[in-house]
Image (cartoon, rainbow, N blue to C red):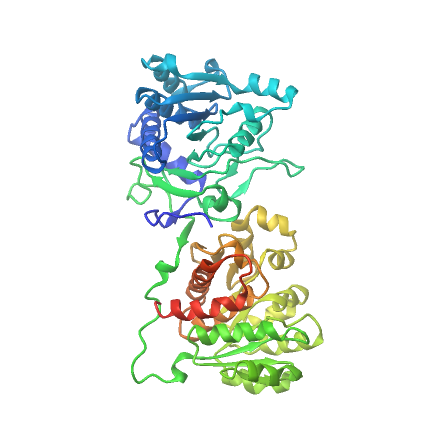
Length: 527
């Protein structure tokens, strides 16, 4: 998992918002563009000295635009401070314009400029391409690489010399500081910019210095891994000032942000005060899914939990987890008394897409109860629109799809969902209503009238069967204890991720879903 600084602002923005703030500063506040560039370069130079242990040999990669101009400022400051410096440029100096050209002239005018080793990447890279050698772009003894190739203005896949420069940066053992965003990353979507054949390159940064406003794409999908640790500097352009023309497009949401959402339990409390959750699932051969969801609901504070599953599973489940009330059901009529006693129904874990699961989902959809809809229940909804219409009787519906399930519901490919997770989850909210928790790296939680929350936390060890079933139980438990759908979903995502991180302290590989149950109990009490 990429490190995330606790000092980062919670509010995240799109590229268009950052540009609006730039225009406001230049056109309304009268701040010259070169002054903003100087601020960016100076902040980057301070960060690299603070965060990278005694760097003396720097390699700066500069592109043709304003991001490259930031690199020229950094190079000048490093040269003036006595650093051993190489500057690799993607363009000829005569092609530079605006503030970037001014930054280049200031670099040339500094007394230390003669000691700077300048390399033109376009010509050198073409020669190395013929010789089959990319790695020589960078010397082996570099202490730090500074990536200022491209910023947020890039809208296409990197090719040619730019792509070769990125590969050389990524192949280097030296840490990498990317200024604003890692070059090649779409700052809005969190995806590497790719061509029609799916080819694309992006820098994998050790540290990213986010400028002006934090970009939403750094916190989900590929952006989360490529950006490394993130630090932020607003350069004096405050997005939350009264004169700012922008509003957040998303919020970072961490476990620490959830503390206090549940009230303390009074001494005279009893189990009926904390809700009755009904878990429906566990078709033949899939009993474990329902058990995991039910156990998670209990561990996260639900007062009572009933698991409705196939009759042949009931004895073994009761023996394995006696705190669960396990009922064998083979028909909707057998399920109805349990529906009437429950406040929250979670349906989907191990449900299957056969007749048994379909008929139970039809009955649940007409219940009017608060619902958590997961796994095969979502697949059945994608097949049968009438079920979704029936669900509209429920005031609270939380859907918890992974990207493939979201794709089925949206009628697009999984790749399309992952290409723009923000657009995908917003489309689901717009077209189907309810709360949507789109699982994945940087889980997104969205609902009508709410700003998207991006869950921070979690790790690759959680990529294992049953994790989604546990999350379903967590959401259901928080709903049963009185949280609204959006709050329950976003809190559950962070709680689940934090439990996964705590469980992974003993190792990521080999982590199983049941390992989260104990840390869930420890963490939920902090809420």
